[in-house]
Image (cartoon, rainbow, N blue to C red; front, side, top):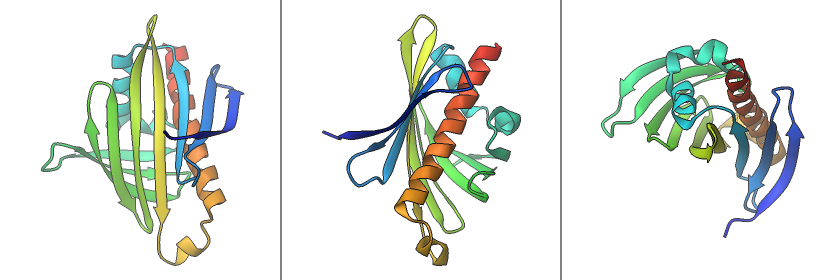
Length: 168
């Protein structure tokens, strides 16, 4: 069983609670959880409408869908303001789960996003991710730095979903 260490539970400016914590004891994986006041199909649409990531998710400078790979996963290239990097990810898309992995210069990222029906037209969104930093820059990317960066990205993405739900 994976133990969790509670790092943050806050009511955000987005009008909802975002629970941010580590998974396991080694701090490599982080998780964020929020209840979004929109049905799962709408949340899935927001997360997979890559052409609209810019403007929808504050971290995204731009995004481009490049087609599907040989396994049917979506290939998406995007630039993250928070990481100051351009990533190319491969993402498998199911009704209730997105699974991605990809690269930017010196960074490998992977994660999962569960999109679960919470009843009453709401969705429980669980975002998990890990990042490995390589090369010379990896010497300066401490575990604490990677954790803070992961929490910032997760809080930004979950906050954007809360904002989208509130605006509809």
